[in-house]
Length: 474
Image (cartoon, rainbow, N blue to C red; front, side, top):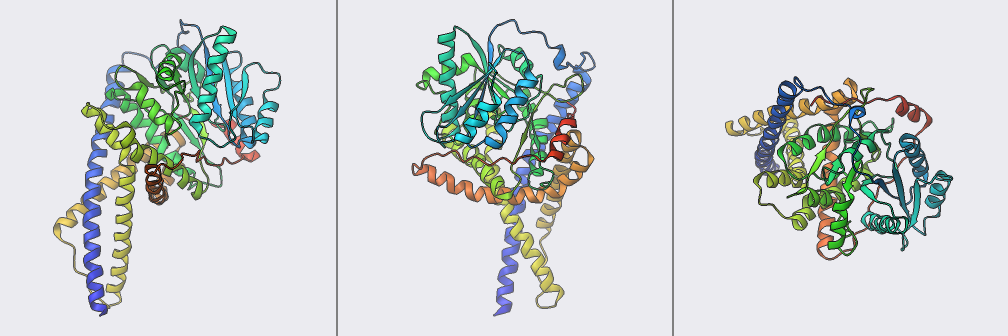
């Protein structure tokens, strides 16, 4: 009986290896094409653009010719530990620029309301808006309430806003970010600057894997998306929408430009506003000190919150996005949307691969002990495994390069083993995302599935003040 069991396990292991290998070859070939296109784009700019034109710094941007205020929307639910410091930093960084911050709070969140009121005392650049319903509703619902407040201010004060900037309550803003948005607001419906994850010192592995992913996402993928001329998604922070474009969308949606039924309203809004005649711009500029003009943000430092956050992304983009946004007539657009939506399928392939690896080690141990002699793998499967080994090495090296340019050598070296952590989180998130998606199909209510933010220790605060992050070459 044990002999038959080992034979079945042996056959099952070979089948899992074959399935995972084929899936990885398909996915890796797709990634390789994308990487090669980015390399070509980067070389073109290096040898044919920057040899003729000097790289522009944010300080050299000309002043905008159109008037109008910049509105910054900050939805806040249970953000008392971080919202006060964020608002004070915004006011200090942006000084006398033409802006107004709208902070959305809830009547049943006294601590956040008190923290906002204390931080903005004496400031005319921040307006606290209380939502009509007790929280939590959804982030989009809170943003729609802020939109209503902005429109009321335009009517009652006879003022005009030119763009709406989105930020979260824990964001660290750049002093020149508003200058970038103001300069480009009349040229595009969406302007997105890079998002740079910062991690807690004690969370090198969980929070650190976001550093790896965003370094590549906003160093390569968003850059090439714009170069290909496809729709640009919003990251939900560090982005500015044309006020006129939001106004048109608001008229079509009953005064609510942000879709409260979406799990990823920022992603969908970006695609809807920048496809077709709309234009999205992804901006990578440095200031005169060599620092990238970007939004620094803190991501979950524990596995539970990381899984919750990434499951929402997967459910909203990879699953619900398929139903809500569909496909496009453009081959390039459909290719990019396929890449956005394959995350949950990649997680399934990873689960198959890890199961196969586990069985491989188990069979090897059994063979070493002389209990059972596993059958050798076929030549075809060997070739697939060698090919996947090449693809894996390429992927790890490519990502480490982006991490190196942004965070330095130490984090680049950590990015290699952190891939295992990222894979585990993504597999757990995919399982939760599928459940969340199935619930949405049955009409389940969409809630604000937000993650908790951690409070920085003094040593971490001083580290952030002195940190200057670079940018990968373009």
